[in-house]
Image (cartoon, rainbow, N blue to C red):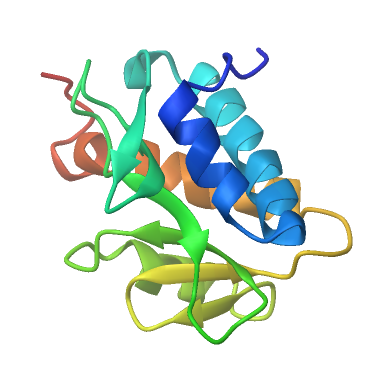
Length: 141
């Protein structure tokens, strides 16, 4: 599945990032939609702005935790942000300690150059998109 067209306001948010960060985050966006499409229980994603940043929500099914795309201040790294009240970033850190850089319990950081580590990143995105299913024993709303 290819990612749907960018909603206008979300496109403006991507345009506001420095070009290398925007390019990397658009690659992550495509991977979010591809990962969601691989999990029937996730349903259709809602793409919106949260705190002025592109956000991906599983409103249709309630299967996952919100994923936001942004950057960390004072950094040239792209950031995939997660709800800090979840165990997601701790889980990513356990499974992929050497693969990614992290910021507290909130963000997985990505360099803007080089190949996107699609396989481990899609596992992380899958865990976020199905977070509530996993906690409820795989039952959707």
